[in-house]
Amino acid sequence: MRDPRAAGALEGLAGNELARLLNRVEAFFTRYVAVGAFEAIAITLWIVHTWVLDAFDATGYLEIRSPVRRCGKTTLLDLLELLVRRAWKTIEPSEAVFFRRIGATTPTLLLDEVDAIFKRKPEATEGLRACLNAGNKRGTTVPRCVPPKMEIAEFAVFCPKALAGIGGLPATITDRSIPIEMRRKQQTDRVERFRSRKARELAAPLVAELERWADGATAEVELELIKVETLANEGQPLASLDDRAWEQAWEPLIAVASLAGEEWLERGIAAAVALSGNRDDELDEGVNLLADIRTVSRDFPDREALATFELLDALLALDESPWRDWWSDPRSEDLKPSKAAPRKLARTLKPFGIRRTDIWTPSGATHKGYRLDDFHDAWVRYLPSDDGQEGQGRRDPASDAGSRLAHRDRKWARNTANGQEGQGTAPQPSRPRPPRPHRPTEEQGQDLAEWLARDGIWRSFETDSPAFPGEIIDTRHGSPSPDDDELF
Image (cartoon, rainbow, N blue to C red; front, side, top):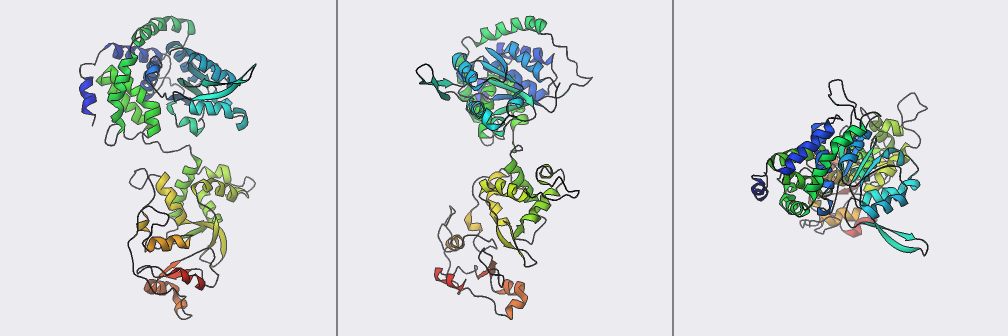
């Protein structure tokens, strides 16, 4: 439900000068390029926001992308060049040219063939990528030495940017962008052929109107920003946008839409939700891997750990698995992991605090592998839950007490069960001291599952011996004392 203060302020604004101007801008560029309805709304609002950039502390990039050539990306950039404020259309600028031009004139950057830039070696584009990563927030500068005295100067890199290319951009840039998907037009798409001279003549009166409107409109837009800032709060229409998508991409555009009246505000909200709502980190290799491991783990309901080769085989067997292209052995006719696959898997999981360890398989053999409980924290933090809600924060450690969860750090398990906080954030209930842990007798060990069900819970650790890979703790009553370590 919309904030009543914002709704009240919008009454009577429908059909005002800005709304008519937005309609004309949208009609102008959609006569030459075929784009989706939501993309057309986003492009229109983005064009107009460049004229009142002084009202904003952040600006979202327009990421214009297509799967192949001849989808209209360059034509769209040509149209933007006619309509935006201080257009600077370029291809592959050097880092020095990039920050010097932006620092001098604060243009609207229209960067074509951006995919070619990021196909080079990372060290060749790292400076330019850093400027793009930080260039969407006002006040960000890059320090450089200026000849002849090599004095240090701070160059501003904040300005509106539209980036066009084939395929996706680096995730750090995509995260700051509004996605504009371009497709080749169909025979049913009624668009005119773009002719630069004719289009420039038609755009001239429209640009003159944009200039007249922008002269003195900054203060109005700043007030509108205050009115719309609650629209992304919980329970509001734009709650599905994450913080970066809202504050650094859509908030300026929604402020412009709000100033134009009720109809354009409704259209702007619909476009924001459709293009950027509930972003799922689809470009993040690590998050994709976590999601697929959670999927394949459900095929092993009775297992507490999986060997590396088991996990890789399961990942490669997934339908439409991206890991087949990355990790399968190209020399083999069968679908099997390459020799480098275990190392690549470990490297991708390491930033999440998940590491390989020695595990025991049901056959009694020892292998390098992963404990499934080591994934739970990352699943909660980075993946949507089964009800579709985004995971947030650490799981309450109280849920671990007395469960069958195996922890690599024995002290952690004992602290949480002994009324201390351990590594979690919630205190645990106090419990009476249990009997000392012990190994099952030879007679009891004949049926380990029956013994565990009756007398205790098995927790496995890296240092366990093949004879009995585990520790018996009766966590229904409490935890053994620290001096019991000598038994294991």
